[in-house]
Length: 374
Image (cartoon, rainbow, N blue to C red):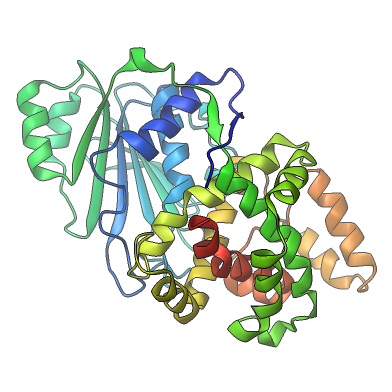
């Protein structure tokens, strides 16, 4: 696939640096060798401090780290984020959109005593946060004495010159990986390769053919044959580029980029990689389609929350349920303009209130191997 770059970061060199670190500079991917549906492992992101670059790294990680072993009814195997600070945490000042309004979080001191918390039970989000105020204890002492879960795939991000060399050496022995971030290198190019994102955008174009798929057939792979053939054989490059140019909202372009960024993680979660023979990838995707679709919805939830969307309140949901089949779409469209989206919910709830949306996620996963091999 020919590389096509576009400046989507504008002047946000911090964001560009964080994405470059997460995708290109880590010694190991955040999910290790991949997290399968039957795994008890989870990704654990730790940061020393909560400056702008550290939070940007967290945001980028949260766009990627969603796996099929999370089930909202069990509330286990969430991606975990631990943010350490020697100063008081101001949670409202963190650039995390509406994530903390929905996901489980707790604020604790160095002794593990909980100061405040939120959404600890019943959250459909597959990510949880722990904010630690160290007060008089230094970072190195706390990290070296921090109990590590053997199921955690832990990546620690730390600014240079914060931890002593001996502490770093010991942490590299204890943890999956430690990445030292040079705060003076926040000058990565703001250009983004959008070649795969353009193909993702075309999946939505071709997915108009999924409208005939009935809700009870959403998981039936055979129902997607016509849309897939349309995408594979009737999307010439000139059409791909012309449709991309029609996307005027940068946030929508980013949505396509974030979706494409996750493809390597998705493939590993079902036991294959981009280098696996294409036929084997296709069969693995078909066999694991339900898990992949559920995981893609979890990713989409996080993307929207980080971008400032929120789910409907119980009262808004109740009002929607009273509307007719012609009134409800208009109501939902009006809410979306206010950054309120009915599809920000658990996968079980999505099946009930908007099953048509699941078809887009399923179709995207089925088209994934074609996009990566173009």
